[in-house]
Image (tube, rainbow, N blue to C red; front, side, top):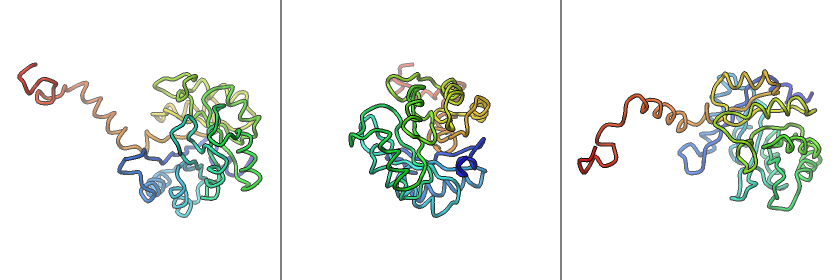
Length: 241
């Protein structure tokens, strides 16, 4: 097994990303977040954006899964061959790309991207898929790793509040490459279950590195016990209940 993949086997990879417009959407901040999760025991980092990747690569020796979210089309995770090559050039050990069958902005195929990354950079490629068939097709295209990242995020894939553990189990059972569980993993128990079902490793992002979402969950839970005060209720200003 490739040493990078061996290093994360059975362990946690933390996705250090912030959404556009958020206070933490800053390369230096994301680098510090990556350093913090590394101190907590993360075996690898997943991050997006060229400058984020460069800073994290300079700061840490851990395996780095890199991507570049760009564009407003259906395919935005490292959407073209050129994006993939630049992600590799920014220091990513594993280049994560959209592994679905949807059209890419440059007209390339997944196999085109995989071949370019392999031949021109020597890096590995992780295909982010949403269905079983896409996972099988990604292996045929030459992907080194398959992730369940996009399960529930395409119009045709099964969605739900929790992780796609059934898909993890099916892919892990049938594919000849490592399968990484990623997407809507909210608890340590869910992460452990993914490993028990055959996942090579687990990627967790929002539940660890997104303070806004974590805070909202606590606030929502408290609101179920203690309703909002009268002045915060709709109609309170005009005396309505």
